[in-house]
Image 1 (cartoon, helix red, strand yellow):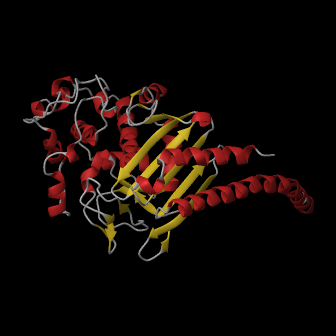
Image 2 (cartoon, helix red, strand yellow):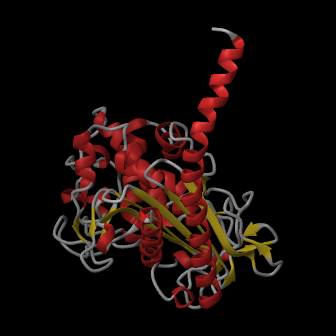
Image 3 (cartoon, one colour):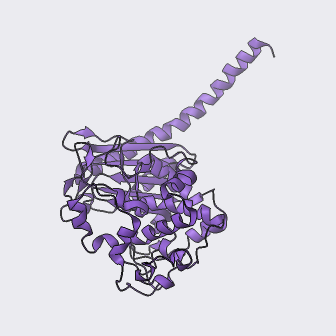
Amino acid sequence: MNKYLAAFLLVFLSSLCLPALAQSAAPTTQLQERLQAHLDSLWQANGFPGATFSVVLPDGRQLSLATGTADSASRQPMRPDSRMFSGSNGKTLFVAAAMALQAQGAFHLDDSIKTYIGQEQWFNRIPNARAITMRMLLNHTSGIMEYYELGDFMQQLKENPARTWTPVELLAYVFDREPLFAAGQGFSYADTNFILFGYILEKITGRNMYELARQYVLSPYRLTATVPSVHRAYPLLAVGYARAGGPFPVEGAFVKDGRTVFSPQFEWTGGGFVSSVADLASWAKTYYLLPGVPAEAREQMRQGVPANTGKDHRYGLGMQLRPGGTAGMGYGHSGWFPGYLTDAEYFPDLDLALAIQFNTDDFRLLKRTPHAYLLDMARIVTQTLSQP
């Protein structure tokens, strides 16, 4: 083709595309402005230290915002790429890896845990030990209670904040206790279930749970800002502020002089990650779609049992199913760690994935749940995108 004709066609075609590109960019700019204004107004009205928010739109574009401060003492502004402890949201990363292994035949969801750890000398000291299945651990129907609320765990954490805990040391807090209910006959959310599940999966595979999460989730889905919470210092970590009267031995700033006041290592498969809000939103959609596992496995994950976490809430396999009104059913997971609150959900009816993080765990400042904040933001997104 004549090079001059080619150049003319290129310019001509580009001119045709420019109006379309401008129309496409305009709603996104307007949407970002509206979301930012709303987030700022919530910060000003409620007085929480700071927050980050991200949304993945139906066309794949992602917007990430921040408001308030990442460090109230230094008045350091919160950034969209600021990172926080994501609490129990991290369970989703471990479950995704586990479901990939389950699809490969490493274990079956209805296997008795006795099959894998029945020879451990402490096995019979677990409440309901002989009746628990792998599925019951993942949907919190085992009847096992929360370990960190028992015995001297908090005192030990206070006296030795740098301590590294083994899974069995954590499980020991529930040994010889009466179960909350017969296995499979109730629901009680407890990190203990996931600690036990993580221990079993490491026995089955002979591999570290964080290595499995990296292989099956972090690397293939490029969650580059998400890292295991096994250290006490992280780049871009916002200072979290723990509420007075909370269960953990910290009040106020959880990060002092760049280091956490105690090691977060104990959380392990109960959560166990530091993340950015952009990673959380991106992962929320991926976790629902989960292309790395068969459709049957995804369906198993969404078969929720009634949960006492909210009205009409259900809990699947490491997945919260929560009604969102006009947004439809939301699939994802919330998270709490001393000084931090997280929520990330995907709404398939809207094809929207949203995530929010606060660097406080004081609900008195938020006035509502992070889930309610996400529903507000989803409403703004849909209203803005539907405008001509």
